[in-house]
Amino acid sequence: MRYDFHMNDARTAPVIIGIAGGSGSGKTTVVRRLTASLGDAKVSVLEHDRYYRDRSDLRLEERAALNYDHPDSLETDLLVQHVKTLRSGEPIQAPQYDFARHNRLDTFDTVQPRTAIIVEGILIFADAPLRALMDVKVFVDADDDTRFIRRLQRDITERGRTVQSVIDQYLGSVKPMHLEFVEPSKRYADIIVPRGGHNDVAIEMLLTLARGLVARG
Ligand SMILES: Nc1ncnc2c1ncn2[C@@H]1O[C@H](COP(=O)(O)OP(=O)(O)O)[C@@H](O)[C@H]1O
Ligand SMILES: Nc1ccn([C@@H]2O[C@H](COP(=O)(O)O)[C@@H](O)[C@H]2O)c(=O)n1
Image (cartoon, rainbow, N blue to C red):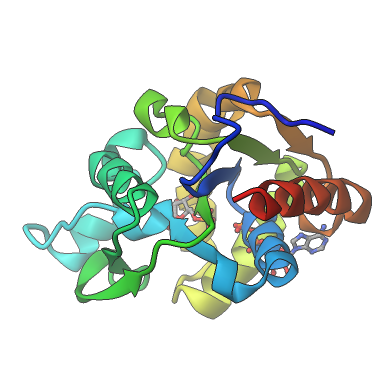
């Protein structure tokens, strides 16, 4: 089978795979399965979450009250530049982000250029220049109540939140921004994975596609 997308047959550049979907939809789970299937040595992952803007100008309480689900909360230009750098075969210094403090850390992770570059995040299809870099666009879908329950559990155990703060943030910004920006961006997907990260049939098809693309790299 031949996959054309918008790339050249004589590909030397890495294949760039975008994994989008609402918060708690199962994106990280899909990325883990892709990485396990292709092999760590062949895959670099860039999370859009790393690129939340540095807001050291604000106090912690002020930062906690910001809307983190609007595209302007992220430094997407820098992510675009980093994807281009990786595509050209050079490593990048990816920012690290602290969800408990709502701010960038002073430290970075070196990300190496590899055969496949996975870009993951809720808003990666909402940005045209970023979208244009992707060879394959996957949207991981899940019911809103399922996503909310997963987020509640995760934000309390991993991101230092209270039940009330998760509810307030969900109703105040996560849900309205999801409806305004994330859900409409699904139209750009090449593949939609229903029922989140544990949909074995859909994920197996995605893994077969990805292995084929990487083998040609
Ligand atoms: N289909 C599923 N059924 C049950 N739990 C799931 C499913 N997909 C993901 N999860 C769990 O839900 C949580 C959120 O998934 P994750 O992949 O981190 O979402 P995202 O990266 O989109 O926010 C994780 O604890 C994960 O193990
Ligand atoms: N300081 C921050 C920054 C982001 N968030 C939330 O993270 C969500 C995206 O991450 P997923 O792993 O869930 O895709 C997004 O919905 C932001 O609300 C935050 O809570 N605090």
